[in-house]
Length: 228
Image 1 (spheres, rainbow, N blue to C red):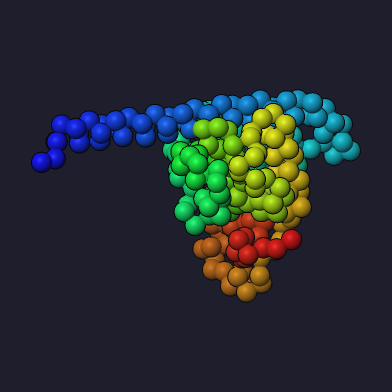
Image 2 (image 1 turned 60 degrees about the horizontal axis):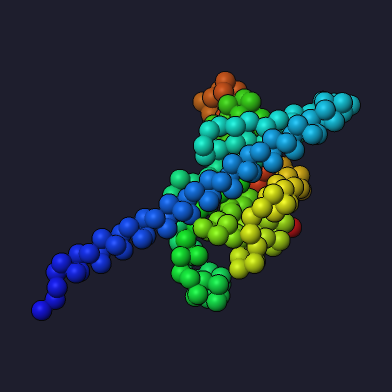
């Protein structure tokens, strides 16, 4: 007959092991995120005088919004870095899941995630709550601080060697610079004319009162389909 006591002990140990592993992933992701904050703040401190001396002084600032968020504002853009509080397993259909790196230790497939969002600075300045932002990349970090980035162009193509790439100061600095560079090349486009040609008096009054005509860098287009 099955030993119920043994089964319960195995179950309890499995819960402890899984929870401990996820806690380690969370702690390592938090360490990375804290270092990311420091690097971004230093980047701003080193270069902000240059921005102030420009012929037209430009917005360039870092702001810390607590445990899970910080922002980098430059020119007409805002990058919001957001760390999710949960730990996730890499989807099974991802190519990296077939690597020997994962097969040798399945715990390596559990990751914390840091999202990088791009918004227009004016969206916050004028409280345009209908404006759209875009996730330009998300960083997967495991308990060994190995990482890969799922994202657009500079981010998604340059940082995709999960078995070999580990997050350190040099890697985080490179990610920051690439995110800023991608944002600079990701320009504001006008929406299709047919999307805005008809507007009611009420909609126009509301827009004029609160500037809520929805704006985004690719308004009217699916960002996922953009090609550069």
